[in-house]
Length: 58
Image (cartoon, rainbow, N blue to C red):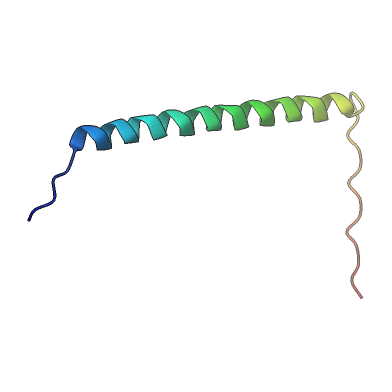
């Protein structure tokens, strides 16, 4: 017996999952932007801190 494929169900599932993924991506992007602004505001204005020298292994 051949399997019946409900194309409308698959399209609906794809559409719903795409909406969820887009919402999650927007939330991540907003959080990244908020943290970037927070980090930049915490730095002294005009001066960038000198990066720490790399740790030596040995």
